[in-house]
Image (cartoon, rainbow, N blue to C red; front, side, top):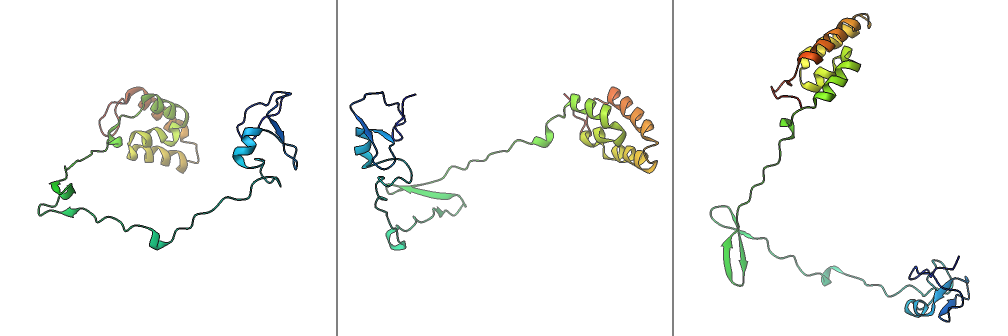
Length: 170
């Protein structure tokens, strides 16, 4: 396996006349990569170049922020460009109403089949009163009434096709 130059990440062929070995860590480099980096590119190597010049920015070096757009008499912001001003176009964006998306019928059936005795499928479909009734029957009877709640859930799974908002489940 041929060594890889840590600067350009390309393979160095054996016998390459442009190969440069670091005197400190014996890392192989292309001579062009060594010269461009001014030394070894292996992190922590003694032959690596010293840290380059740093830039210091003070508050006085920063330009002041541009003034905010003025507000015209009708309340819309006004923008100027080249000495001409015009009111900004009013844009509205209506976010999609995710609450109105239909519920999944497959999820409703799976919840009703496997945890229907707890009323989870009815919580999913938005029928909170039914869900609480099934949960109370199961919990208050110390899970003895779970069979009754589960049969009730199976009947609902077979007959209910809309959620509490009267939207068909897909």
